[in-house]
Length: 300
Image (cartoon, rainbow, N blue to C red; front, side):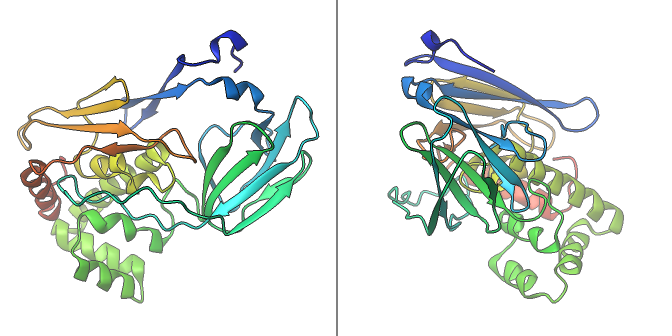
């Protein structure tokens, strides 16, 4: 997709809407805003999949992926690739009023320089920042396995942080057979094998969808929007005004009306990072909804 140079300037914004199929004919639309800046016209590379040559549209890859930095313009400039460790915590509950940490500066743990014909391999997990000599940089989150899907037993445990106690998580992490331990957790929650399997399908399909839609400098399920999506599900309506995105959950037989507002935050790695405006008033709703999960409710 190309844009005329006259529109790639402040304060113009490119609006995109992505539709994801959830189940059957149900869909969820997510809007993205890409602020257009004049410096974007200086960008002289595009990340593409080495095998297919297709552009990398999402901001995540797996450690088995291979990319090329396809260059244009000068065509022979070098690209600096920096890797940063993954040490970002999952989102705290929506009623947490702890003062947010001061934005910190993290340092690259390794760096390399690649040319236009070099194949980029990502054998280590981490945040990768691609920095040309003078232009907009681009960040990519690299994780192992088949991300955004959950396919390994040890990947099942971290997203349970929103439903489990610290003692339960420790027991799961120490289990000799993580898959059996997670299955047993859901069996106890559901009360039967059938209901336990329903809960597993519901919860981990939400994990996968959160990874697809909300990945930023950390996995999608660990972001603020991912946390709310895992526990509350698809919002009844989504609206966007300025830097804020509002999710509304209409009143139903199982839950009262509730609204969450997320604010876009500056991030060196992605344009897809929003933080929840936390409120103490969310406490009753949060614990009530988590309790429904713990009681084996499958209609959340």
